[in-house]
Length: 149
Image 1 (tube, rainbow, N blue to C red):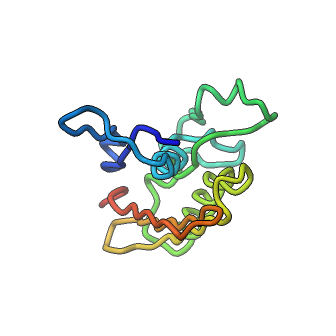
Image 2: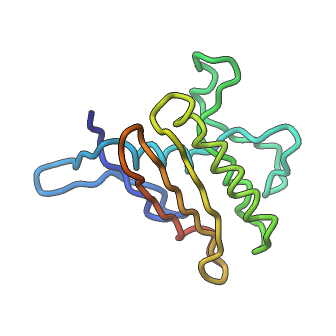
């Protein structure tokens, strides 16, 4: 099964489809699934602190039509947009990414999903996502271009 290839450009620019001279590029959908899962805003929990101080808990509009009660799409990584470069923020980033990608194992898309959060450079929060698909080798995706100081 193929999908339109989506690439993550950066936190400010978001993601976009890949085009070649003949039209839209296709891929196996795994990278697109990871990008959409991580960079679509999941609704904040009631006890989450909203970065801009508002009451806007965001969330994906289609969650209200989920087949499974209280099923949510996306991640809460957006809550870290104004955080400092601290170990506790790396821990939360990993938790939010794990939460966003958990569906891949639950739905049988992947045997395992491993996330490592790091600060590869000053002012940058990076994520390394390693996904093992059933009967296949590990695919890795690296995201390092967001939350720059």
